[in-house]
Length: 153
Image 1 (tube, rainbow, N blue to C red):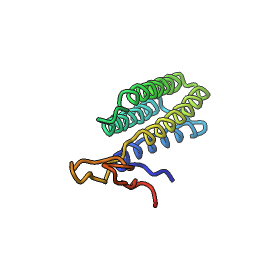
Image 2: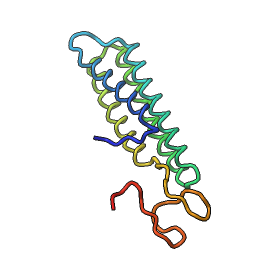
Image 3: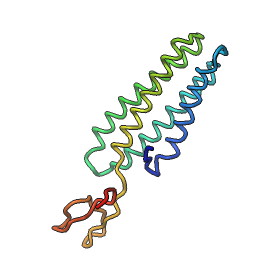
Image 4: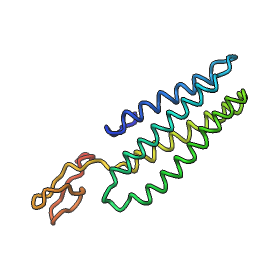
């Protein structure tokens, strides 16, 4: 089971629901998926991924990692937007093979995007430096060891 950071849970849940709806739309058998529904669902997943990226980038303020992460996430989101457009076009053209390929590609890109978001997200620190009352990174702080609250000791 994936541990989803609390601030990203609503977006992750909405993305998962949207991906399930897309999969259901292409697995309906003989009934052709409605282009408007498929396109809107892909757009909603994209909106949620963008919102999650915004939250993740906000967690990186002051770390020096924000600029490279911004560029990387922008490229990922652009690829996801292109895949969403391909899904919409395939549904409008009533091309089940292209729609199937598009949904599979969109699902793979969305999953990869979430893996990146989880890896880049900076969890709020719980340790506080005694002399400054500001959060500190796990490790050595002012000569004293600060344990990482995410690992077991």
